Image 1 (cartoon, one colour):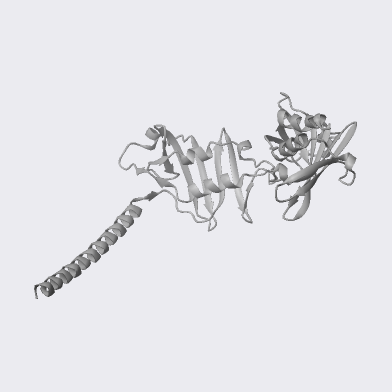
Image 2 (cartoon, one colour):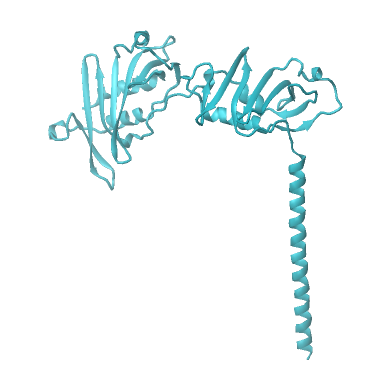
Length: 326
């Protein structure tokens, strides 16, 4: 009888604990939801723009303005200018709902915060025509800035994000040309043409499992064309696959301007073939003269309007490695 009574007491106690546990859980969830709502309600936004379609800001005395068309940002000063889309998208996101750290009510006039003569003026317009103009004033320590909306007298304290995203000149917003995303192992053939010579190398795969290969001059059909040491051409393939543009001094070159870059009659032309999604693609790079400080070569990819600069050491490695191939 005592055992039954103890079992009943234990069962009842367990039931009570379950009810308490569920109640505590519901209370905690409710408290968390209230805290979340309160926290979200405490956030102050200077702006509320949906789908920002145009942006402008002043930098070093020049206004830079951009308009989004067909999902792509264009520089209003020159539609051919290649804009870094990710950077302008980030700025658009920041200004669409610019968050304030604090609202400085009942304080000094705007001049006390440098907002009567702002260091920067950022304008943004949404697709529905809503427009906001943000004024940036003095720095408040190392991380924050004073800000206000044009036409309003209330200053705010914001993070340095907006300042950093607009502390950029036009050249820093230029998207550089990207070369094929390949590795040296993807390259199947290489041709290097210079003023007085042309060399063509072809790779032959021996076994897909272990990746063993052989390099040949001109054709894999003749055994005598086999290169005795693969290392030089493997280095060349790796060097070609790692070439990157350092800068672009001219993104809309005309034919009559090519001589100024040594690209009317290139000193060398490099072409390589590579596999892409099961088909063969080719990439051609023309090498011109050295730039003014001799740190980079002027280069141009086939049919491109861009004159690019690539570091001299990277190009030299591609043009001289073939001397050790036998």
